[in-house]
Amino acid sequence: MKAISLFSGAGGFDIASFMAGVPVVFSIDIDEDCIKTLKMNAEFNNTTIICGDLSEYSSEQIKDLSGIKDDEKFIIIGGAPCQPFSKNGYWVTNKIRKGINDPRASLVNEFLRVVTDLSPDGFVFENVESLLHPTNKVIVDTFIEIIQEAGYKYKIIRANALNYGVPQKRKRLFIIGSKGTFKSDEPKITHGDPENLLESHLKPYVTAGEAIEEFDTPEYFEKEEVTEGGKYYKELLEIPPGMNYKALTEWAGHPNPKFVADKRFWNFLLKLSPDNPSWTITAQPGPWIGPFHWTSRRLRVPEIAALQSFPKGYKFYGSRRSIQRQIGNAVPPLMGKAMIEFLKESLEDYVKVDINIARTSTLV
Image 1: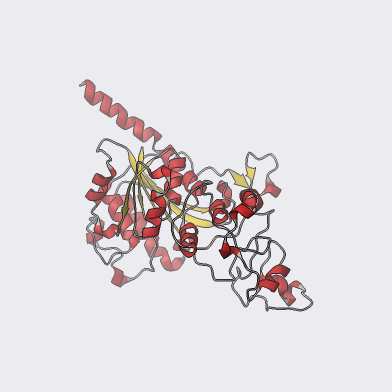
Image 2: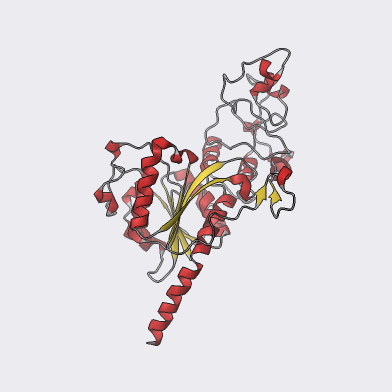
C-alpha cells in the first residue's frame, strides 16, 4: 500500500504515513519553504515532491506523477485548511460532485476532487476540531454525503494528541474513509492520564520534560530564544512553570498584581512545566505568546519539533518564523500514525478479497 499526500506542509502527516508502514510516493504543497523542508529529509528520497497549487493539477496528473499503477492499493492523506463556508465559494455544486476543478472551490473541495476522481482504497482528512461547530455543520454533512456516494464507509474521530504519545495537548478532527470494514470505533489509544491508569494497559502521557530535556544544553542555543531585556522579561521570570500571566493577577492572590485576569490571551506569558505535557504549539505566536521554556526562554527549533513528535534530526528549511509556522501547522506524526494504522487495519480484508479475485482470474 502507498500514499498520496495533499497539502503536505512540513511533512507531519507524511512522516506519520511512513511510520505506519505506508510509504508516501507523492507530496504536494504550495509553500516553497515546506517543499524544501521535505527535500532535505531522507524519508522523501523516493517521493515525487511538487511545489504548486493543487487546483492546477488534474487528478490524472497526480496519479501519473505518483507512479501508482492501477492494480496497486493506495490511500490519500491531507490536512486541507478549511475556509469559512460561503455560497459564493461554490463549496458544493454538481460540477464539484463530478470532480471538475473549479478555481473558486475551497481547498476542501480540492481534497474531495482528488478522492472522488482517483477512488483510493481509503483516505484520512485532518482539520481543526471546530469544523464540527454548528456553524460549519453544512460542510461536514456535505463532505460525508459526497464520500458515501463515492462508496466509502467513514469514521469521524475527535482526537487529542496526548492519547497517542505526543507530548502536547492538541485537539484535532479526522474524517477517515475506507472501502473496507472498520474493526473498531476508533484508533487505539496508547497513553492516558497518569492519575487514572490503575490496571490499565495505557502508558502515562509523555511530559514536556521527557521530550525536550536533552536539548537544554549550550550546543542547541539559538539567538531567537533570548527574552532577557524584553518588555515582559521580569514578569516572565516570576511566573511558575505551567502557569501563564494569571499568576501575576489578583485572581491568583498576587500581592502586587501586574495584570487583570481574563483580559489577555490565555497563552500570554505561558510557561511549560517539565512535569506535564506541553500546551498547544502555535504556528504564529506573538513576541510574548507561549509556551515558553520553564527556564524563561523561548523554545528552540528541535524542542518545538519534538513536542510535535517529529523524529529527532528532522530538518527544516527557512527563517525562524517560517520554521515555527511549518511545525505549528503540522499534523503531529504520532497522532497521524494512529489514524493511518486505523485505516490500514480496516483495509486488510478488503485487500485480501481483491488479491483472491486476481488469483482466480489468473487461474482461469
